[in-house]
Structures are given as C-alpha cells and as structure tokens.
Length: 457
Image (cartoon, rainbow, N blue to C red; front, side, top):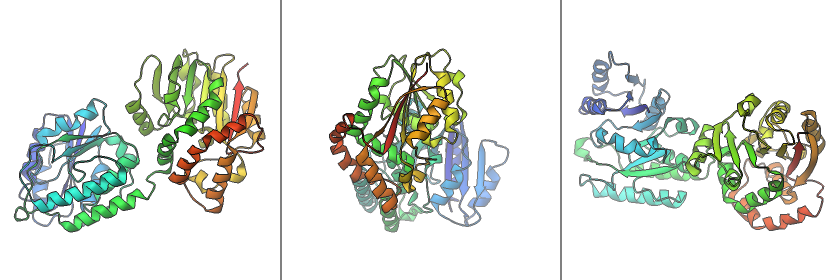
C-alpha cells in the first residue's frame, strides 16, 4: 500500500530540511506532499532547493497564509496513495514510527489511527499543554461517546478514500477537532497506538496557545449539532433503532429464500440479520459503506461483499450465483432509471425467484427529508405495480407499511421543513414498534413505505 505524507509548513526554516530527510529515510513506498503556507523566514527558498528531480516529492506554495487546516486541505487534494499520514514540520514526532502507525490500517482493522503522545515514551513537557489536552479530550469523549487519550495529536493516519467524504472547513488548528468530529460522526473504525513525542517549549518556537484550545472546543460543539452527511448519518441512526430493523425483517423475512442479493446494503443494518442464509451477496455503490461493513462482518463462503452500481446494472455479474431472492430495501427511489433496474433484477433471478422490494410511499409526503436523502420520488401503489409488472414480474402483493411513520414524516418534513428526523424521535418511535404488529391484521389506507413482492414465473 502506498503512503502519502502531507506536511503543512509555516516558518520552519530551522527544522524543515531535517524532517523531510527523516521522512525520506522511512523504508516505505511513499510520496511526500509539502504545503508551504506562505512562509516568510526562508523556508520557501529552502524547499525550492530540495524539490528538484524527485517525482515522489512535491511542494505546493500557498499565495497567502491561511492556517494549518487550509494547508492540509490543499495537500489532501493532491494525494495519490492508499494511506495518508499528517506530519508536522518540526521535530516533535518521529517518522520512523510510521510502520507502527499504519499497521492497523494495513491489516484491515481500522479506518483511522491516532498516534497517542500519552501512551508512549515522551519528553516531559508543559503542564499547561497537558492540562489543556486533558480538558479537550474530556469534551471530545463526552460529546462523541468515545475514549480518546490524545485527540489533538498531529499523527493521524487514515485510508485515503475516507477523506473524500469529509466536509472540512476550519483553516486553523481547529482542523484536529473538526477531523475527529467527522471521523466519529461517520462511524469510522478508530485505533490509538502509542508514539514517542519530543514536545517543544515556546523558546523552541512552539506555536499553539490557549486560544487554539478554545477554537478546538468551538469546532467540537459546532460539528456535534450539524449533520456531516445526511445519508450516512441516517444509516448510522437507523442502526440504533434495532426494534424497527427487527420489525422490517419480520415483514420481509417470509419471502427471503436461501441465496440472496441484497442490493444497496448500506452499512449492513439488515445484512447482519440474514447471515443464516445459504449465500448472501451484500452489494452497494458506496466504498465507504462497504468498508464499514467489512469492518463489522467477515467475508466467507456464505457472505460476499461487493461494490455494485445499480445505475449501471449488469445481470451478467451474477451469472452462476443462482440467486433466488433480490432484497432491495429503500434503494430504488435513489435510482433515476428505476424501470431499467427492475428489469435487471428480473434477469438476475432464477425462475421462481422473488423480488422483495421496500420503497417510500405516498407522493404527498415528499419533502426536504426526501431531497436530503437524494430520493428521486416516492411511489404510489399503482405506479409501483405497473413498474414491477412491466419488468416481467408477477406481482404477489403490494401493501402499505408503517402508518404512524407516515404521520411523523409529514409533520417533520412538510410542516416543520426538517431535513432529517431528530435522533430522539427515532429512539422514541423504536419503543412503540410493537404497536406496528397490528398492521399484520389490519389493512391500512396509507403508510410511510410500500412493500412489494414480485415473482419471476
């Protein structure tokens, strides 16, 4: 795996050449990306002398000083490696510890690794900095329900693909807090490993002050109450409503056969509940979702996890899998050409195979919550029937589900204009899921969803 080392630099003439020499000496396949944040002490001239002739060494020059966060964002845009490490341009951290830092990622155990200065050997440094770090770690752990020992560490290693999904805005040292908030809110798998640390004093050109601690607290609070990604956060919230997920499985379970394609598996909220089947293919277009799923479940002869884009649905991909069920829960509404996908599902299935389809119902409910989730549509019963039969299926049944949920969706989306269901409402709704059992015995006139069962004759 190729390593990308991103080094933000501002006025480090005394150490920049030495830190780059140490990074180069690390025996790993790597590229070095230095972002000079408009240094004025001769650092730029030093970097220009070092940059010639090495394709794995690149220097980016900012036209004006913008801060560490802005420099890192610029560096991330030029990354071509599989794993990224952030390296400060001073000599407080030891590049020879890179192999230890990236090991959990290389072995597939983690998405992100923090190098903790408080778990490893370190120089005795300033109590004021130690105390400030303890306060920030405490706030981080309370707000995001985690156990960091060193959130503010420079040494953060992560899979390169996850940074593409982060919305980073802080230009200053608030980057550390904002990055951590994104990591925790997106459900990334995080490890801490001990590292060595040689902390500088202010006489040795230390730059961080108490003001940066306040900035970190600001970004921790700001990110806590903002959705970093509506789709991803909705999946993570749905993971916590286990009663509702069990109820959905109870409704679709009788129609699921032994060899199943779950089209649009997300992070595996339902996948984990059908592992007792003979063979399951969990497919999704999002590599981030699939990586989360791989962290949670082990691929085997019974479970295959694949990247698959329904917008380019190719039935030949599953030739030889002999699938008797296509399970597609709250996915079809995300596809522009849903008719083509239904025809593809028909081709994928063996004769007498079943399509088990759950989609959002009632066009009148369409709101900002739908557009925020990238829904193209909500379905009427008649529209869904025509599309399923038009794809070649015999429609066994199509029924509304979740009448209380439809009322809640209307109130939140149409009346209050919300873009997401509040977390507390989802938790509260989960407590009343047993009431939904009545819907098995009473035909409801409308609901949040439509459950359709089609058979390939």
